[in-house]
Image (cartoon, rainbow, N blue to C red; front, side, top):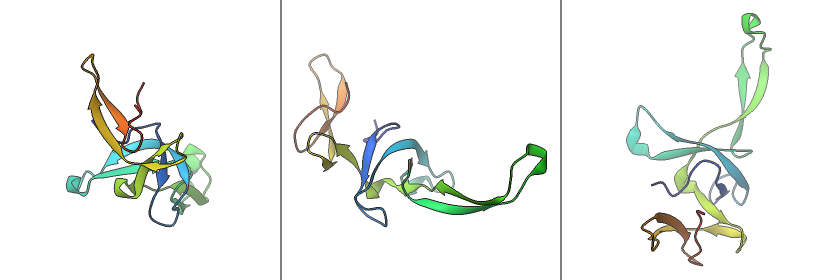
Length: 112
């Protein structure tokens, strides 16, 4: 079970976008180097300008296109809306046997 999943709201804790929040679009693992850990695509975070060549067969124009680049999971923390800050994540078993994510600072359950 991953601590950060798709559609979570996260906050950047290191790098050029430090302090900004966004929604996780996808969780990636590098295929060539699986030991490098998790990489995340986050909406509006780590935006780079990509030079794209035009493709007339697919009717795609060329130019400079802004797009999100992956950012390493170590630079991200889950956003706690109650405390309005980044928070660490832990795991806990409920009485019915389910394993859920919890915020370390408050003990609140992240998953519903």
